[in-house]
Every structure is written in C-alpha cells, then in structure tokens.
Length: 311
Image 1 (cartoon, rainbow, N blue to C red):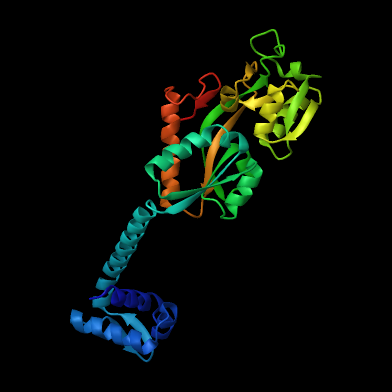
Image 2 (image 1 turned 45 degrees about the vertical axis):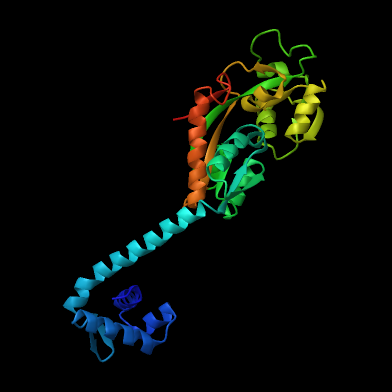
C-alpha cells in the first residue's frame, strides 16, 4: 500500500468520479484507475461499485476512507513539522515595527533571536502603524509591532497587546527644565518650542491630538525629522520633544513624565488571521514575549517608571 494510492482513492471517494479525480490530481485517468485496482488487489476487496458510470463506495471503501484520510493528514503534518524544523536552521522572518520601537525595543529582541537562530535572515520594515497594517494585510510581513488602536481598521488581522508605555517630555540637560514640578501637564507645552517628527509617525499624530484636546496648536521649531534627528535636535537645545519612555531612557536627555495616565500608548504584535505565521515567526514572537518578561525583572533595563508589561 502506497501513499499515492491512498491519495488517489480518497480523491475518487470525494469526487465520486474517476475522470474528475484524475484532473484534480494532474494524472492520466487510466493511470489512476490502474493504481486503484492495484490497491484493491492488495487489500483483497473492491473499494468502489462501478455501475454505468456511477461511482459509490463499497463497505470496504467506507471502512478505508477515514483511515486513509487520517494517514494522509498525519503524513502532511509530519512533512510540515520537519520542514519547519529545517526552516529554523535557514529561512527568514519579515518583521514590521515603528521607528521608535526600532530605536528601543526591537534591537534587543532581534539580538536574542539571532543568538538562538543564527541561520534565520531577519528583514525589518520600519514604518508607521497604519503603513505596517497595510503591508501586513497584503502578506508582505509575517509579524508587525504596532501601536493600537489602529488595528480596528484591519479586521483581517489579530493582535496581542504586549506593553503599555508612557510618553515623556525630553529636553536638553543644558537647557532649563520644562516645568518646575516633577511631572508636566500637557497644557504646559503651549507656546513651548517643540521638535516634531515627520508626517506618518504615530508620535506626531498622538502629540498633535493631545495638544489640540488641551485647546492649542503645538509650536514647532524643527519638524520633519526621523528618530535620530529628533534626538539630536533636542540635545542641541532646539526644543523639547514628546518621546516614548523606552527611547528617552536611552537618549541621555532629561526626562520629565506627564501627569496622569492619558499620555501613554499600547504596543501590540499583529499577524494575519487567515494565515498562520511560519515557524520562525512564531519563534520570534516567543522570544519577544520572553524578552519582555525578563526585562520586567530589570535585567534588560526596560524603565519601570515608563513601561508596564501587559498580561
């Protein structure tokens, strides 16, 4: 008994038609019929009633069909598992992440993943959450680290919330503090010179919306920068900037937290619902979660005052 014979038998049983089954299997119909007859001789029983072109399973065929399906399914599972193990020695993972996460959280995660799976090629697509959602939906990424709640615009995606991060005000240590208090109110940003990211950054949209909700338009001295440029402009004393806590903690800039809990964001890892991520991507997600749990203990330095691991 061969797997090919069982596959031919199961296809004929499902289609109840030899010619249609041969077309689906991309084989010649006489070859398929010959393989079925060989299987019947080996089993010592007819599997089909063949009467004037009508095909029906015999009792022996009815008994064999669920067993054949299980054998074929188990074979496919074995093949997939072996391939996935092989893929962990070679292959690739396509990860999307926002610029602020690429500057803070992602490097440590990718270092840990590369140490464990050095044969996996890592491809990182850096962009805003909305762009990443579109790219992920189109199947061009395996996973994406995004800022929620943008996912509500993409019902084909699923996401797991990982981390809640406070936004802070960053200023040059050589400049006066932005407030005399330990924490700053959003309203205190009014008329203060600010350094702002280019359009498309989640942080730009979030900061602008917060200022407008407080009743004013933010005042920009420099705008249009990427993350490294914004940090450099703040360090040079050109203005203050609203930054994620993880980025600010590594910047060497003065950090002033906001009062209250409105100025925070939630980080999630997203994937498509209709396609299971490949094994290597699932392993990257596991490493990501393990890194967060380790970082929460302080070993890798996620700033406890600005981040909170979500269950």
